[in-house]
Length: 334
Image 1 (cartoon, helix red, strand yellow):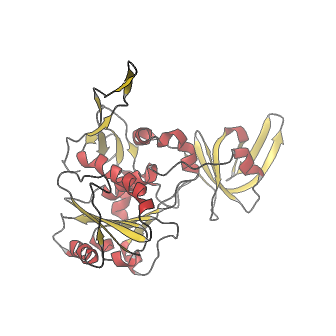
Image 2 (tube, rainbow, N blue to C red):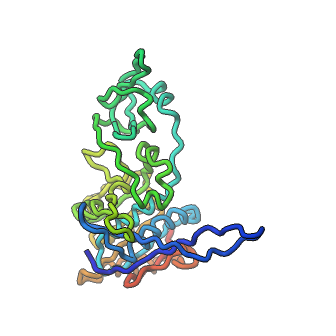
Image 3 (tube, one colour):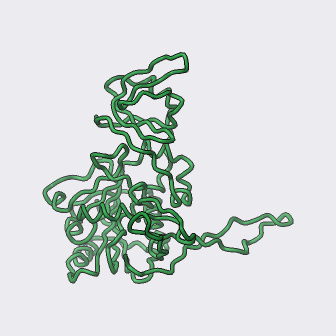
């Protein structure tokens, strides 16, 4: 892990009513995000952790302003570690929570051709719906290979593609989801996550980044939550999934990003060299300066010179890069 630390993100406390007028807050609450490589490691507070999470959130907010142009944000970082996962977490957690029908209503309108993702407080159960059963103790449902009382389910949503039955533990929302407000509808988010992000690069590195833990860097002994809990990478053992991790060579071989994809993070030159072939509305390029090559930066600059329009990071995206990070943003025709 890099030793770039000593970071805080200031969150201004809400104003208070005093004597019929609104008083300015006198204290600023300090929110410090920390990251750790593995369970049991202490969370280390780092400035760029919160900055990159915030960038992902701000990019989603900017999406509505793009019209028919593509926004490209290039980040030149000392090391690529965690950047794609952090930006992806901010993007995912800033998506408004889905509005779902009640679990019973979903079960009643399903048939044996329907695949469901059904979430309880303890389990995520994904697989084919079988049937509802009436019992003296109440209605039960057989879905995803599990038979449980309907009342146990908190959120249920159809899965578009057919899938085998799989079950996993329901992960806690964690500090970052609490901080962003996403925890308020956490189980609904797990049942129906947004399918609008892709990560492209070296698969093993991106998967390792998603195993890193994020949490409250100001509290000694705080327990972190895996970044993958927020990004939800696609995988054969996942009961809930959202984000494909695509190997850069496969993109070069013609593999297309999903039609639902609205944002992609291209990690290092192996992915960035395909920038002109990626047409999603938002693209983040992570340029790794620890590699002795200027190819990635040259590709971005070439795209910037191709009938682009500059975008101000501060005035339009409302974002400031952390120390040691250089960034540019521009739009091009899609």
